[in-house]
Structures are given as C-alpha cells and as structure tokens.
Length: 115
Image (cartoon, one colour):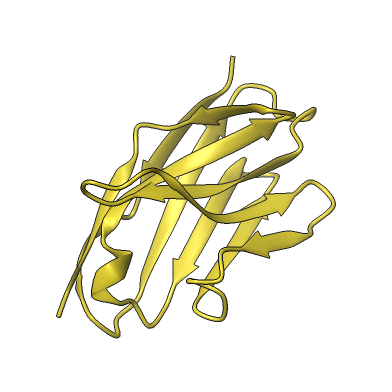
C-alpha cells in the first residue's frame, strides 16, 4: 500500500516562494505518475502538476511558468517548487500517486499566500 506524506507548507507573502516535499512509502514502480493537486476553501480539488516515470511533466495553466515538479527516485520524494506565489494559490496541497484511473492522496499541507 502506498502512503504519501507532505511537508513544507506555510504562510508566505505574495511574490514569495515555497517548496513542498512528499515522501513516498510503498511500491510506486507501477504508477503512471506522481504529482500534486490542491483544494481551496469552497472549491473542488484541482490538478496542479504531475511528473511521469519517464520524466515528462504536466502543469495546470494557472501555475505554468511559476511552479516546477520534480522527483528524486532514490529518496522516494516528489517536490513542488512554487515561485511568484499569488493569493489565489492559497489551498491545501495534496501529493498524489496515479495508477491508471486510481489516485492516492496524502493528508495534505496548507499553503497560505497573503496579499
């Protein structure tokens, strides 16, 4: 069973940066991708970024050019570098492992961007 534990969230001013980390336990060799989703108050959970096992990355249009997803397979860790943060980036960020149509999430980490 795969478990995902996020860290690195916090409070930052607009224009600032944060780096989220996700430590993965369990076997993700058969996963299609790992990455990040987020959920803002009163909104549905939405896609942020993923990185496939072959290294291809995908980003939501709202974060493209500002966020960067990466993975360190030896450390079984996925990262999300977030730059030029905006108040609308405020959300709980969830690490995700994708197996076909099945998504496994971590418990989430809060990111708050003040204006």
